Image 1 (tube, one colour):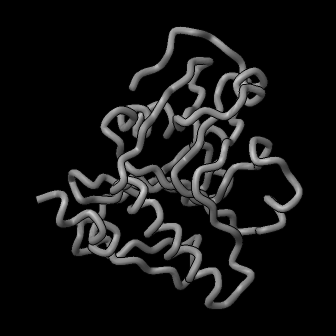
Image 2 (cartoon, rainbow, N blue to C red):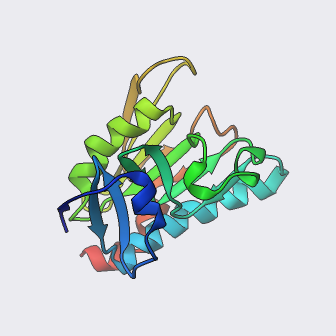
Amino acid sequence: MALTEQLMDADAFLARPPTRWREELIDGRILVNEPTWFHQEIALTIAISLRRWIEDIGGRGAVSLPVDLRISDRDVLAPDVVWYADRSRVAVMASAQLQPPDVVVEVRSPSTWKYDVGVKSERYAGWGVGELWLVDPEARTVVVRRRTRRDEPRFDASAELSEDDTLTSPNLPGFALRVQEIFAVSGEHQK
């Protein structure tokens, strides 16, 4: 899918009735995405891993599958998974009015990957997202972009993890997910 030519602002986009498609607004244009079953399994695997980590001790924030995030008057993004370190930051706000997440996860879809690694990555960084995980089932890698300091204006550190690596983060003490496990759900379908 591609960006539509019709221009709209975030208020108009969010006021529309729900559709059967997953949609985002980028630069005032609607981006339609139809994730595959395996894309969704990968996102769910990551969300469940984060949820288990949260529940192990408690007080480790909140995780969600796609939720509209109003980044600007022309951008409403819906990452595949979001994590907030402070659960109270999400409890009192409407979804589109949420503050920047501490971690955003985007799983590769053939139609939207160029936006995930390009303009969406830039928007997340500029908005104040602390860390971005770009999960690529085709390459079977996870690219992690993060800020090394909270006041850093952009992602200033990047690492590419392969299936032999373990996904960890200084922002999620004690969290560890083997990259191989992320792709295990889609492994037989990639051959």
